[in-house]
Amino acid sequence: MPATAGPSGGGGSNLPAAVATTATAAPDALREQFELLVRSRYGLVIVDTLEEERVEELFKQIASELQLHYYSWTRSRGLRRGTWDAFD
Image 1: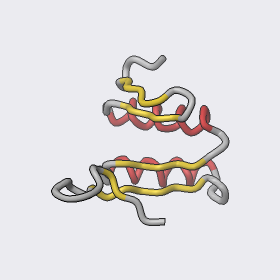
Image 2 (image 1 turned 135 degrees about the vertical axis):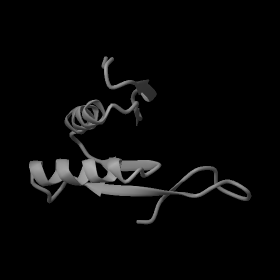
Image 3 (image 1 turned 90 degrees about the vertical axis):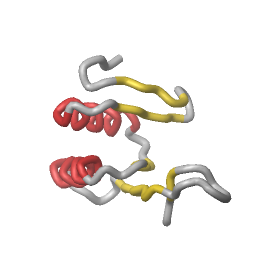
């Protein structure tokens, strides 16, 4: 499934997005894949999972190690911003 970040329609930039699945990857391999996506500077990483809290904690750890800001969006909580040193 191709995905892009940014405004749809004319004039907006289409940043690459990454789509990840948690169904078949082992935990260590999954973490390596997610970290590679973050280090590759993708504008958006989409993870479709039933284990929302687990994946969010994994991305928070990666952001903390790389000293990056952390953003997440969920249906239940909307868009949230945090930093590597201030998790909620």
